Image (cartoon, rainbow, N blue to C red; front, side, top):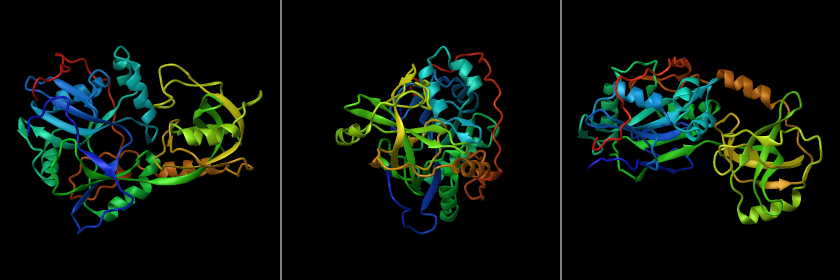
Length: 379
Protein backbone atom coordinates (compact mmCIF):
# COMPACT_ATOMS: atom_id res chain seq x y z
CA UNK A 1 0.00 0.00 0.00
CA UNK A 2 1.36 3.43 -0.95
CA UNK A 3 0.98 5.88 1.93
CA UNK A 4 0.84 9.49 0.80
CA UNK A 5 -0.58 12.56 2.48
CA UNK A 6 -3.43 12.94 3.16
CA UNK A 7 -4.06 9.49 4.64
CA UNK A 8 -7.52 8.33 5.63
CA UNK A 9 -7.09 6.73 9.08
CA UNK A 10 -8.72 3.57 10.33
CA UNK A 11 -11.92 4.31 12.25
CA UNK A 12 -14.14 2.77 14.92
CA UNK A 13 -17.86 1.99 15.04
CA UNK A 14 -19.93 2.52 18.17
CA UNK A 15 -20.97 -0.43 20.34
CA UNK A 16 -23.09 -0.60 23.48
CA UNK A 17 -21.04 -3.12 25.48
CA UNK A 18 -17.77 -5.02 25.67
CA UNK A 19 -17.49 -7.53 22.80
CA UNK A 20 -17.33 -11.25 23.60
CA UNK A 21 -14.16 -13.18 22.91
CA UNK A 22 -11.47 -15.35 24.41
CA UNK A 23 -8.80 -13.73 26.63
CA UNK A 24 -6.29 -11.82 24.53
CA UNK A 25 -8.56 -11.55 21.49
CA UNK A 26 -9.06 -7.82 22.04
CA UNK A 27 -6.84 -4.89 22.94
CA UNK A 28 -8.28 -1.96 24.87
CA UNK A 29 -7.20 1.68 24.80
CA UNK A 30 -8.60 4.83 26.48
CA UNK A 31 -10.59 6.97 24.06
CA UNK A 32 -8.95 10.34 24.56
CA UNK A 33 -10.90 13.57 24.18
CA UNK A 34 -8.66 15.21 21.59
CA UNK A 35 -7.89 15.64 17.90
CA UNK A 36 -7.03 12.61 15.80
CA UNK A 37 -3.69 13.24 14.15
CA UNK A 38 -1.40 11.40 11.74
CA UNK A 39 2.28 12.35 11.65
CA UNK A 40 4.24 11.72 8.45
CA UNK A 41 8.02 12.04 8.21
CA UNK A 42 9.32 12.00 4.63
CA UNK A 43 12.68 10.86 3.32
CA UNK A 44 14.16 14.35 3.86
CA UNK A 45 12.90 14.44 7.49
CA UNK A 46 10.17 16.92 6.60
CA UNK A 47 7.22 16.54 8.98
CA UNK A 48 3.54 16.79 8.08
CA UNK A 49 0.77 16.64 10.67
CA UNK A 50 -2.76 16.01 9.41
CA UNK A 51 -6.21 15.66 10.97
CA UNK A 52 -8.56 12.73 10.60
CA UNK A 53 -10.11 14.37 7.53
CA UNK A 54 -6.79 15.35 5.99
CA UNK A 55 -6.65 18.98 7.14
CA UNK A 56 -3.17 20.40 7.70
CA UNK A 57 -2.24 20.72 11.40
CA UNK A 58 1.48 21.26 10.88
CA UNK A 59 1.35 24.98 11.63
CA UNK A 60 -1.14 24.60 14.49
CA UNK A 61 0.95 22.39 16.78
CA UNK A 62 4.63 23.30 16.24
CA UNK A 63 5.72 21.63 19.49
CA UNK A 64 4.43 18.28 18.21
CA UNK A 65 6.01 18.79 14.79
CA UNK A 66 9.36 19.55 16.42
CA UNK A 67 9.14 16.51 18.73
CA UNK A 68 8.36 14.24 15.78
CA UNK A 69 11.24 15.76 13.81
CA UNK A 70 13.59 15.25 16.74
CA UNK A 71 12.70 11.65 17.67
CA UNK A 72 10.95 9.85 14.79
CA UNK A 73 13.02 8.39 11.92
CA UNK A 74 12.56 9.33 8.28
CA UNK A 75 9.95 7.58 6.14
CA UNK A 76 7.69 6.83 9.11
CA UNK A 77 3.94 7.34 9.58
CA UNK A 78 2.30 7.39 13.03
CA UNK A 79 -1.34 7.49 14.14
CA UNK A 80 -2.43 9.01 17.44
CA UNK A 81 -4.41 11.62 19.34
CA UNK A 82 -3.42 15.23 20.02
CA UNK A 83 -4.41 16.10 23.58
CA UNK A 84 -4.04 18.99 25.99
CA UNK A 85 -3.45 18.07 29.64
CA UNK A 86 -4.22 20.78 32.22
CA UNK A 87 -5.30 20.86 35.88
CA UNK A 88 -5.63 17.10 36.10
CA UNK A 89 -7.86 16.75 33.06
CA UNK A 90 -7.85 16.55 29.30
CA UNK A 91 -8.85 20.01 28.07
CA UNK A 92 -10.67 19.89 24.73
CA UNK A 93 -11.47 23.60 24.87
CA UNK A 94 -7.76 24.41 24.72
CA UNK A 95 -7.42 22.29 21.59
CA UNK A 96 -10.25 24.22 20.00
CA UNK A 97 -8.58 27.52 20.89
CA UNK A 98 -5.33 26.28 19.39
CA UNK A 99 -7.13 25.22 16.23
CA UNK A 100 -8.76 28.62 15.59
CA UNK A 101 -5.85 30.79 16.78
CA UNK A 102 -4.04 30.94 13.46
CA UNK A 103 -0.43 30.47 12.42
CA UNK A 104 0.95 33.66 14.00
CA UNK A 105 -0.17 32.76 17.52
CA UNK A 106 0.77 29.09 17.30
CA UNK A 107 4.36 29.43 18.63
CA UNK A 108 3.30 31.35 21.74
CA UNK A 109 0.40 28.98 22.43
CA UNK A 110 2.78 26.04 22.08
CA UNK A 111 4.46 27.42 25.20
CA UNK A 112 1.42 28.65 27.15
CA UNK A 113 -0.93 25.75 26.27
CA UNK A 114 1.39 22.91 25.15
CA UNK A 115 -0.10 19.68 23.88
CA UNK A 116 0.91 16.02 23.76
CA UNK A 117 0.81 13.52 20.94
CA UNK A 118 -0.43 10.17 22.27
CA UNK A 119 0.70 7.64 19.66
CA UNK A 120 -1.22 4.37 19.41
CA UNK A 121 -0.27 2.93 16.00
CA UNK A 122 2.40 2.89 13.32
CA UNK A 123 1.60 2.57 9.61
CA UNK A 124 5.09 2.86 8.17
CA UNK A 125 8.46 2.51 9.87
CA UNK A 126 11.74 3.53 8.20
CA UNK A 127 10.20 3.02 4.77
CA UNK A 128 8.53 -0.31 5.52
CA UNK A 129 4.75 -0.43 5.15
CA UNK A 130 3.49 -2.28 8.24
CA UNK A 131 -0.28 -1.82 7.77
CA UNK A 132 -0.53 -5.49 6.77
CA UNK A 133 0.91 -6.69 10.08
CA UNK A 134 -1.43 -7.70 12.91
CA UNK A 135 -1.99 -5.15 15.66
CA UNK A 136 0.12 -6.94 18.26
CA UNK A 137 3.14 -6.88 15.93
CA UNK A 138 2.65 -3.20 15.08
CA UNK A 139 2.40 -2.46 18.80
CA UNK A 140 5.70 -4.25 19.42
CA UNK A 141 7.36 -2.11 16.73
CA UNK A 142 5.88 1.03 18.29
CA UNK A 143 7.09 0.11 21.77
CA UNK A 144 10.55 -0.50 20.34
CA UNK A 145 10.50 2.93 18.73
CA UNK A 146 9.57 4.57 22.05
CA UNK A 147 12.45 3.01 23.99
CA UNK A 148 14.68 5.86 22.79
CA UNK A 149 12.13 8.66 23.29
CA UNK A 150 12.23 10.62 26.59
CA UNK A 151 9.27 9.78 28.82
CA UNK A 152 8.75 13.39 29.99
CA UNK A 153 8.22 14.92 26.58
CA UNK A 154 5.60 15.82 24.02
CA UNK A 155 5.45 12.33 22.49
CA UNK A 156 3.85 9.59 24.56
CA UNK A 157 2.91 5.99 23.95
CA UNK A 158 -0.82 5.55 24.52
CA UNK A 159 -2.09 3.08 27.08
CA UNK A 160 -3.09 -0.36 25.85
CA UNK A 161 -4.04 -3.56 27.65
CA UNK A 162 -5.25 -7.06 26.79
CA UNK A 163 -6.78 -7.47 30.26
CA UNK A 164 -10.55 -6.92 30.08
CA UNK A 165 -10.77 -6.47 33.86
CA UNK A 166 -8.23 -3.66 33.71
CA UNK A 167 -10.06 -2.12 30.75
CA UNK A 168 -13.31 -2.18 32.72
CA UNK A 169 -11.56 -0.32 35.54
CA UNK A 170 -10.41 2.33 33.07
CA UNK A 171 -13.94 2.54 31.68
CA UNK A 172 -15.44 3.12 35.13
CA UNK A 173 -12.87 5.56 36.54
CA UNK A 174 -11.16 7.59 33.83
CA UNK A 175 -14.15 9.64 32.67
CA UNK A 176 -13.37 12.13 35.43
CA UNK A 177 -10.09 12.93 33.70
CA UNK A 178 -11.75 13.55 30.34
CA UNK A 179 -11.56 10.06 28.84
CA UNK A 180 -14.70 9.38 26.79
CA UNK A 181 -14.57 5.59 26.98
CA UNK A 182 -12.57 2.87 25.25
CA UNK A 183 -11.39 1.98 21.77
CA UNK A 184 -11.40 -1.81 21.37
CA UNK A 185 -9.31 -3.45 18.66
CA UNK A 186 -8.93 -7.07 17.52
CA UNK A 187 -5.44 -8.22 18.49
CA UNK A 188 -4.77 -9.77 15.09
CA UNK A 189 -6.36 -7.02 12.97
CA UNK A 190 -4.44 -5.28 10.21
CA UNK A 191 -4.58 -1.51 9.67
CA UNK A 192 -7.31 -0.94 7.06
CA UNK A 193 -7.15 2.64 5.79
CA UNK A 194 -10.59 4.28 5.99
CA UNK A 195 -12.35 1.17 7.34
CA UNK A 196 -14.34 1.02 10.58
CA UNK A 197 -12.62 -2.08 11.87
CA UNK A 198 -12.29 -0.98 15.50
CA UNK A 199 -14.95 -0.54 18.17
CA UNK A 200 -15.64 2.46 20.42
CA UNK A 201 -17.44 2.11 23.71
CA UNK A 202 -18.46 5.48 25.15
CA UNK A 203 -19.49 5.92 28.73
CA UNK A 204 -22.74 7.86 29.00
CA UNK A 205 -24.67 9.10 32.00
CA UNK A 206 -27.89 10.96 32.64
CA UNK A 207 -28.05 14.34 34.34
CA UNK A 208 -30.46 17.19 35.01
CA UNK A 209 -29.40 20.62 33.84
CA UNK A 210 -31.09 24.00 34.02
CA UNK A 211 -31.78 25.79 30.73
CA UNK A 212 -30.40 29.33 31.03
CA UNK A 213 -30.34 30.45 27.42
CA UNK A 214 -30.60 29.48 23.78
CA UNK A 215 -28.84 30.09 20.48
CA UNK A 216 -30.76 30.96 17.34
CA UNK A 217 -34.12 32.62 16.87
CA UNK A 218 -36.96 32.51 19.45
CA UNK A 219 -39.20 30.74 16.93
CA UNK A 220 -36.57 28.16 16.01
CA UNK A 221 -33.78 27.84 18.58
CA UNK A 222 -30.77 25.93 17.31
CA UNK A 223 -29.43 24.89 20.72
CA UNK A 224 -29.75 25.35 24.47
CA UNK A 225 -27.15 26.67 26.94
CA UNK A 226 -27.22 24.60 30.14
CA UNK A 227 -26.23 25.21 33.75
CA UNK A 228 -26.00 23.58 37.16
CA UNK A 229 -25.87 25.01 40.66
CA UNK A 230 -22.61 24.96 42.63
CA UNK A 231 -22.32 24.55 46.40
CA UNK A 232 -22.75 28.29 46.94
CA UNK A 233 -26.07 28.30 45.10
CA UNK A 234 -24.70 30.01 41.98
CA UNK A 235 -25.91 28.84 38.60
CA UNK A 236 -22.87 27.99 36.48
CA UNK A 237 -22.73 27.44 32.73
CA UNK A 238 -21.70 23.82 32.23
CA UNK A 239 -22.57 22.84 28.68
CA UNK A 240 -24.72 23.08 25.61
CA UNK A 241 -26.90 20.82 23.54
CA UNK A 242 -26.02 19.72 20.07
CA UNK A 243 -27.87 21.23 17.10
CA UNK A 244 -31.63 20.87 17.66
CA UNK A 245 -33.61 19.05 15.00
CA UNK A 246 -36.57 20.91 13.51
CA UNK A 247 -39.15 18.96 15.53
CA UNK A 248 -37.27 19.41 18.81
CA UNK A 249 -36.85 23.14 18.13
CA UNK A 250 -40.60 23.50 17.50
CA UNK A 251 -41.40 21.74 20.78
CA UNK A 252 -38.94 23.79 22.81
CA UNK A 253 -39.64 27.25 21.36
CA UNK A 254 -42.96 27.91 23.20
CA UNK A 255 -41.26 27.22 26.55
CA UNK A 256 -38.51 29.79 26.03
CA UNK A 257 -39.18 33.41 27.01
CA UNK A 258 -36.46 36.09 27.21
CA UNK A 259 -35.26 36.79 30.74
CA UNK A 260 -35.64 40.12 32.48
CA UNK A 261 -32.81 41.96 34.24
CA UNK A 262 -30.80 40.09 36.84
CA UNK A 263 -29.87 36.95 34.93
CA UNK A 264 -26.80 35.34 36.59
CA UNK A 265 -24.88 34.74 33.36
CA UNK A 266 -22.90 37.15 31.15
CA UNK A 267 -24.53 38.52 28.03
CA UNK A 268 -22.01 36.75 25.79
CA UNK A 269 -19.87 33.63 26.20
CA UNK A 270 -16.11 33.70 25.55
CA UNK A 271 -14.68 32.75 22.14
CA UNK A 272 -13.75 29.08 21.93
CA UNK A 273 -16.11 28.16 24.80
CA UNK A 274 -18.04 25.83 22.54
CA UNK A 275 -17.01 23.96 19.45
CA UNK A 276 -19.13 23.67 16.29
CA UNK A 277 -21.87 24.75 15.72
CA UNK A 278 -21.50 27.72 18.11
CA UNK A 279 -17.76 28.23 18.21
CA UNK A 280 -15.77 30.86 16.37
CA UNK A 281 -13.25 33.63 16.77
CA UNK A 282 -15.64 36.11 18.40
CA UNK A 283 -17.85 36.04 21.51
CA UNK A 284 -20.84 33.70 21.37
CA UNK A 285 -24.14 35.57 21.48
CA UNK A 286 -27.24 33.92 22.89
CA UNK A 287 -30.64 34.82 24.39
CA UNK A 288 -30.99 34.46 28.16
CA UNK A 289 -34.13 32.82 29.58
CA UNK A 290 -35.40 32.51 33.17
CA UNK A 291 -33.66 29.47 34.71
CA UNK A 292 -36.81 27.49 35.48
CA UNK A 293 -36.72 24.80 32.79
CA UNK A 294 -34.99 21.50 33.48
CA UNK A 295 -33.38 19.48 30.70
CA UNK A 296 -32.86 15.79 31.44
CA UNK A 297 -30.01 14.90 29.13
CA UNK A 298 -27.93 11.94 28.16
CA UNK A 299 -24.27 12.91 27.84
CA UNK A 300 -20.79 11.55 27.53
CA UNK A 301 -19.43 10.93 31.01
CA UNK A 302 -16.12 12.57 30.11
CA UNK A 303 -15.85 15.91 31.91
CA UNK A 304 -14.83 18.78 29.63
CA UNK A 305 -14.03 22.01 31.45
CA UNK A 306 -16.35 24.74 30.07
CA UNK A 307 -17.14 22.63 27.01
CA UNK A 308 -19.00 19.40 27.78
CA UNK A 309 -20.69 17.98 24.71
CA UNK A 310 -24.26 17.22 25.71
CA UNK A 311 -26.67 15.25 23.58
CA UNK A 312 -29.86 16.73 22.18
CA UNK A 313 -32.38 17.39 24.95
CA UNK A 314 -35.30 15.21 25.79
CA UNK A 315 -37.91 15.22 28.53
CA UNK A 316 -37.93 19.02 28.85
CA UNK A 317 -40.71 20.12 31.19
CA UNK A 318 -41.76 23.34 32.89
CA UNK A 319 -41.53 21.84 36.37
CA UNK A 320 -39.88 23.02 39.55
CA UNK A 321 -36.09 22.94 39.52
CA UNK A 322 -34.68 19.91 41.36
CA UNK A 323 -32.12 20.24 44.12
CA UNK A 324 -28.82 20.21 42.23
CA UNK A 325 -26.56 21.67 44.90
CA UNK A 326 -23.81 19.53 46.41
CA UNK A 327 -22.72 18.01 43.11
CA UNK A 328 -19.68 20.28 42.82
CA UNK A 329 -18.17 19.00 46.07
CA UNK A 330 -18.65 15.40 44.98
CA UNK A 331 -17.07 16.10 41.59
CA UNK A 332 -14.13 17.77 43.32
CA UNK A 333 -13.49 14.73 45.53
CA UNK A 334 -13.71 12.35 42.59
CA UNK A 335 -11.45 14.55 40.48
CA UNK A 336 -8.75 14.46 43.16
CA UNK A 337 -8.87 10.67 43.06
CA UNK A 338 -8.63 10.58 39.27
CA UNK A 339 -5.33 9.77 37.51
CA UNK A 340 -3.06 12.68 36.65
CA UNK A 341 -1.84 11.38 33.33
CA UNK A 342 -3.11 8.56 31.17
CA UNK A 343 -0.04 8.12 28.99
CA UNK A 344 2.59 5.57 29.93
CA UNK A 345 5.50 3.98 28.11
CA UNK A 346 5.05 0.52 29.64
CA UNK A 347 4.90 -2.61 27.45
CA UNK A 348 1.41 -3.98 27.07
CA UNK A 349 2.25 -7.08 29.10
CA UNK A 350 2.94 -5.05 32.23
CA UNK A 351 0.30 -3.85 34.65
CA UNK A 352 -0.39 -0.20 33.88
CA UNK A 353 -1.74 1.92 36.73
CA UNK A 354 -2.62 5.41 35.43
CA UNK A 355 -2.78 6.73 39.00
CA UNK A 356 0.99 6.28 39.32
CA UNK A 357 1.81 8.33 36.23
CA UNK A 358 3.17 11.85 36.42
CA UNK A 359 2.35 14.76 34.17
CA UNK A 360 5.41 15.44 32.00
CA UNK A 361 7.26 18.72 32.17
CA UNK A 362 6.89 20.99 29.16
CA UNK A 363 9.85 23.16 28.24
CA UNK A 364 9.33 25.70 25.50
CA UNK A 365 9.95 24.08 22.11
CA UNK A 366 13.41 25.02 20.81
CA UNK A 367 13.90 26.82 17.54
CA UNK A 368 15.03 24.17 15.04
CA UNK A 369 18.18 24.68 13.05
CA UNK A 370 16.29 23.54 10.01
CA UNK A 371 12.62 23.70 9.12
CA UNK A 372 10.89 20.36 9.83
CA UNK A 373 7.43 21.44 8.71
CA UNK A 374 7.60 20.92 4.98
CA UNK A 375 4.87 18.64 3.72
CA UNK A 376 6.32 15.29 2.63
CA UNK A 377 6.40 14.20 -0.95
CA UNK A 378 6.50 10.49 -0.09
CA UNK A 379 6.94 9.32 3.51
